[in-house]
Length: 321
Image (cartoon, rainbow, N blue to C red; front, side, top):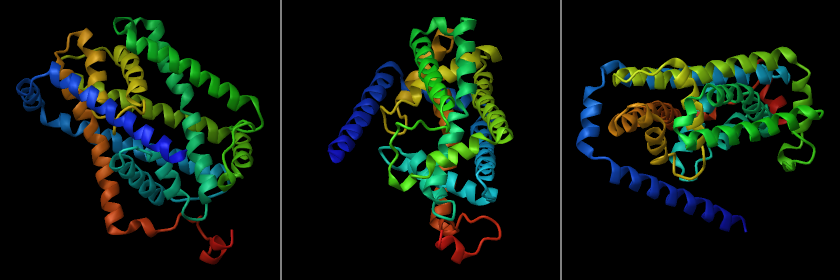
């Protein structure tokens, strides 16, 4: 049964990738796309990588805060190593799975997989208020009315994310009691109850999550300026989160084809030519590739063997936990 689901998921991703790539191929000629890339100023190629690396540092800071709220002091360097390596795994595997990979790398040391899962899921849940706010802005501002697909995605995400927040906020922990998570992370709910009692950690995690969302939008804002098709910051703050909702859907391998198609859907109604919209999608992706490349180098260099151990704890103590 599990194997059949895996093959079904892979089949869906392959099909989605082929269909999305085929649509782009039928709508776009290669020569105009290459001309758009050649016309980009040199600084445009550094924006995505710089911004994604900054967002990775912010994610590491959020994880460090959450781990600290759970009673574990962990350095930024090993957390960054786990995030980079997880990103590489997510890019390398056809089925994705970078979040699970990050949990696995984070949980190899003394925190354990259960606490790593708590931390990763907690920062995702605490990211939801920011994304809901941006999507509500997009819906209310009218910027999404030109693209019904983005408007529908925004409404759908707001409803689902609001439901998750209501469930998470209505019980004694961030995770509802009816959600079965398995024996390996049986401490999950207790850890999340501890985390909920630390208001300062929760607030700062949300604030840092808001910074990552604005940086994510800033990448596209800069790239639009690079192709001489600037949009207002308000429009970008509306379009990018709604577009990302569609890009995140697990219907392609690494978002290939879907990313470019969604950028075309989002930006051509605002006057961008199709080659420019696709070029923005591809250039933005270089930041993810750079992060994955760093993760690949870390794995090849063997830094993956370093334990995630709270400062001052002995190896023997970690093994006996």
